[in-house]
Image 1 (cartoon, helix red, strand yellow):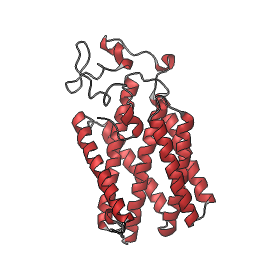
Image 2 (cartoon, helix red, strand yellow):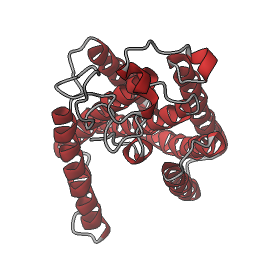
Image 3 (cartoon, one colour):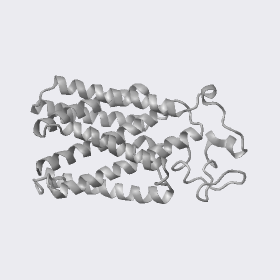
Length: 283
């Protein structure tokens, strides 16, 4: 089972046939996790099968947590700069809304192109972040116009969800196992399918009030579910990053980690923005 992010779902850091550490078969001489050997099919981790200590990342060009942090800061920083410029330069008009939709589509295409590339492309990833930032800047300004302070509250909410998820993951309160990932992804796929149907109903006028994405209590429940799914995606991302570092993935893989984390955080922020608007409307 793999992460929700397209970049993770196509090729995890383990470079095996499945989710890092889950699908590898037990092998004599190697450590086992949950009855399985996480190194069996991992070319980065073959030295562990012999009990040899990992080589120094700085000497071998392997990915480290510092690499992930730096690349993530660059990617998220690009999103923030793009959002700030869009907020400052684009007034709230129908034209701006069209530009936001266009930027979102371009960001989606760039994300898909990167997802199907064998290697990480920093230029492609940062371009995705820039267009995603333009989209977020425009919609954030629109929400702020209707519900003053909504973007700021959404940012705080995103930070709170991300921080809490990291805390419970590092504390071991959540164990990312094959069963956990399988159940979570089943729920996520069902959620996306239902949302797609709901969107069609809205487009064809069957649900003019937004249906499941309305601004009422039902919309709030759906928003909370979406945010919980975002937290679930984060745990998968954390696990794959952790495995990538442990398995000695190449340093350039840190860009993929930053890319995946950015997509997940954007998901959480957008859902948090909608949820804040719903609660503000009910006041």
